[in-house]
Image 1 (cartoon, rainbow, N blue to C red):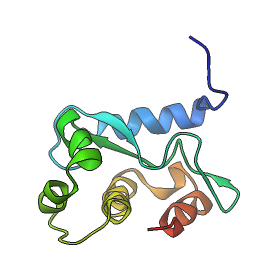
Image 2 (image 1 turned 90 degrees about the horizontal axis):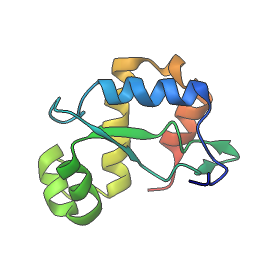
Image 3 (image 1 turned 60 degrees about the horizontal axis):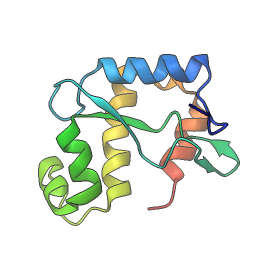
Image 4 (image 1 turned 120 degrees about the vertical axis):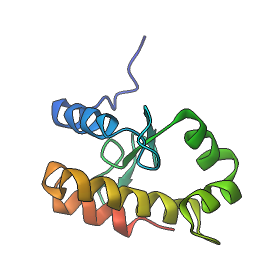
Amino acid sequence: MRSKGNAPNKKQVRWREEVRSLGSILSGENAIIHHCSGAASVHRKIPIGHEWILPLTESQHYFIHKDLPYMRELVDMPGASRKEIEKHLFEKVVYRLGVEQIGREVYESIMDYRI
């Protein structure tokens, strides 16, 4: 398989696997990785795609893409946009694993990402 040219580096792979090991940030069940803005995302010239990830179950991953009203209910955020939900859940991930894992500059760029 050919790479898209944006494969994660070793630090990003470690981060991804630590995030996955948390289990779903909503339920603790086995998780897959959701890239909140795509693996190649850059915001304010700072790459964030491999860092802004969430551990979700397959069904939660489906809901965040295809059933936003249900996802809002799941996280108790009525009226929230998908990006607001993703930022909220990402804060929980960073709280559990520590901001130093990705760096404050990356974290702040993610939290500043458009809504």
